Length: 175
Ligand SMILES: C[S@@+](CC[C@H](N)C(=O)[O-])C[C@H]1O[C@@H](n2cnc3c(N)ncnc32)[C@H](O)[C@@H]1O
Image 1 (cartoon, helix red, strand yellow):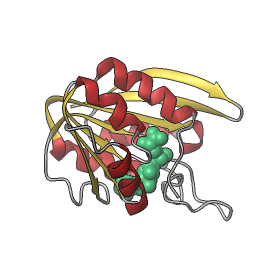
Image 2: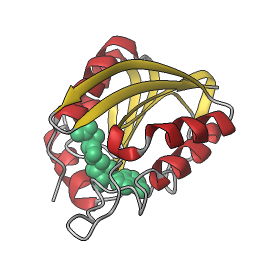
Image 3: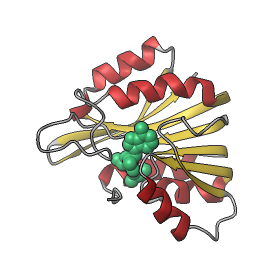
């Protein structure tokens, strides 16, 4: 199953369209919505997903775009390059007995995938490189910001929106 774009995807996409340039990584690309939004502004976009079905879907949908490349990768396992922007709409919900899907849940607490991602991202950002990332009030935002601070990222909240049961945040992190 490939994650179909939702509110979080559309919020992040708006900031991708506004901000990105240079070499881009779209982590957890799903249907490729962020990669597609970044392509007109980018020198090159590499888009990866742990789910081979998502990568196959994107390869078929976007084969005519010369500056878009899709790969299967568990976070950075298949990504040696460095980037000017790394985009991530991560799986950010806590696991529950009803939901253990890889496209939505980021570990028992919800923030574990984000923690691993922020740690590994440091080695993959160019000088002045930035991360654009979305998460929710269900992720424990205080914990996410604590992790970012510990890793010495500077953070900037770009947007916060309330939907039915949750707040969704878009943040920019830089080193
Ligand atoms: C919330 S969806 C976002 C999809 C799309 N980027 C969007 O904005 O709509 C999270 C995506 O991350 C992928 N994913 C989950 N864990 C991952 C990991 N460890 N490495 C790479 N991708 C992962 C999922 O398969 C899913 O496609």
